[in-house]
Every structure is written in C-alpha cells, then in structure tokens.
Image (cartoon, rainbow, N blue to C red; front, top):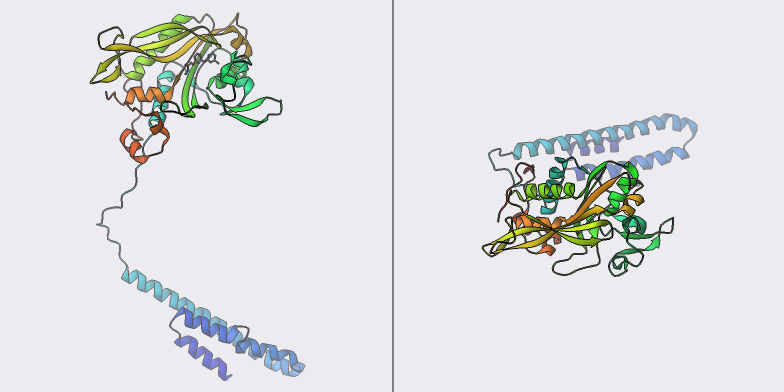
Length: 362
Ligand code: 2NL
C-alpha cells in the first residue's frame, strides 16, 4: 500500500500538532483514504473481503498508532522546551497579598460577647425575619403601638402559616422571647444582631445593630441591673471613672423602666466617655435603655412571674462603636468603602479581652 508508506513518512516528518492533525484528517477523516478503502469492503465478494479486510484494518491501526506516537513526542518536546526556557527567580519579592480588616461593628460585638461572657452570659441568636407575635405582641406592645405602623416597620406582603404578619425584626427582643420559650429559666443571655427600621437620615440607617441582654432568675432586682450595666460600661470603655445616671422612663416590655446616661468630659472639642457629667465641661449622654422585665412579658415567655423575675437592657452597637473609637458618621459604617475600613478597621489578630481591649483612642 503506497499510501500507507507515504502517510507514515509524512507523520514522521510532521513537526507541529496542526500538521499531525491535517494528516489524521487526510487519512482517517470522513473523506480520508483509509475511510474510502473501508467503504470498498462492502462491495467486495466474501473471498476478496477476507483477503483485503485485514490489510485495510492493519493500515488503519498503523496510521492511528503513528499519529498518537508523533503527537506525544511533539507534546513532550514542547514541554521540555518550556522547562528549559522558563525559570523561577526565588530571590524576587513575593507579590503583595491584599490584607482584610475586621469591621468596627464586628470588633465591638466581639468585645461585648467577651465582656458579658465573663459575667456568665451566653450569646443567643434568632431569625431576622420575624412574625409580629414574637416581635411585638410578646413584648407587650399593643396593636395600636406606633412602632407597629407600616411606616416604621418593614412588613412582608404575605402572612405565615398561622396568619401572622411577617416583618424584619425591629429589635433583638424576639430572640430573648424565643430563648425563654425554648430554654426556660434561669437565663443569662445577650442577643446581638442586625435590626431593621424604616428610617434613613444622617443618624439613622434602615439596618443597624443592636444588643440586648436578659437575666431571669429568682429574686432579681434593680441592684443587679445597676451593677451589671456599670461593670459592663467600665470594661467596654476601659475606664474606672465611669459614672452612671439612672432616669425613670417607659418601655412596654419593662416595669419599671430605666434610661441609663453616662457622664462625659469634653476634651479637645470631643466628647469622651468618663468622669462625672456634672463637672464643668461635662455632660450626660444616654447609652442604654433598661428595666425590670414586665410580668406580662415573663408570662409570654412561658414562665410564672411570681416565681421568676428579671432585668433587661438594650443599646445600639453602632453607636457604642462610634463612642469608643471616635467615628462621626453612622452612614459610613455601611458604605463598604475599603479606605474607611483601612482607617478604622482592626487587625484580625487583635483579640479583645476584658482586662484590656484594644485601647481607647480619644
Ligand atoms: C433601647 C431600649 C431595651 C429591652 C430593651 C427587653 C427584652 C425582653 C424583655 C424585656 Cl425579652 N425587655 N429588652 C428592655 C429595655 C430596653 O432597649 O433603648 N434600645 C435601643
């Protein structure tokens, strides 16, 4: 078979993958000569087919084998050439890896968890999509309460299987209701997380972060509340001269309700937490809302208020971060601008502790 010899010679001489492929097409392709020979078998007499068949099949196998061999040889030659030409210079400096940082809100949430863990509080969490029973009713907020209005709360168009309105939680209180119902008493928990209100201006974003705390036990009174908040604020602001002012207030979920102010001093035109608010160049700012848990809320949590008492408190994590680390625009917290994070962000290895946070920078 003259064509076979020619083809094998051409394969041996081919010096690129494209050349090998062209030969494959000319021999084994639809219009190739091997394929043409294979087609002639059909028209042959049985004797002829018996003598010609094996030769044609042998030719096809010889071509296929030669093509494969040549292709492999060319590929390894190309690899050898690359290995010879390319070198790695181990003395070059490594390319710079972009370094992330911890967002101040995450940092402050870690600090809060750490501080309260040292007082025996566990961290509780729950859904951000809530029903109006857990978000409002169980907190003793009547159907007519203004916070329930459409323009203050983000409602979903559909109700849940029990016919309850669905909404984005407006505070983390429902987490505490769920934890009371699931775990019973005694209880010492904090519930940090995202909350949502239909509100947007220089000092309000529609999503912000809140932390609430709840203690349920026997014989709990206002003294426990005051000591806990004072200990927390001293640890958080890393100062011993934290002075509190407790004012009577009103929340539907606590009775009595207490608003907590902390004394500040003006240093270089900036308010710095610490010192008595009544001194010259000082004042009071509200940092927490709190109170003794309303009997009705204890009942909604599945407990007997004659047996169990408790206190609760709540505050804004974003505001606490601003106060401690000196940011002045709340909206920048959620812009996702890496330059802002580069300025205010924290290294991932700065571990907050009760004995020493990451330092106050007034
Ligand atoms: C504020 C006030 C507060 C609570 C939150 C609470 C939760 C349960 C029962 C009773 Cl389950 N109370 N939470 C109590 C008082 C105040 O937050 O000004 N937050 C920003």
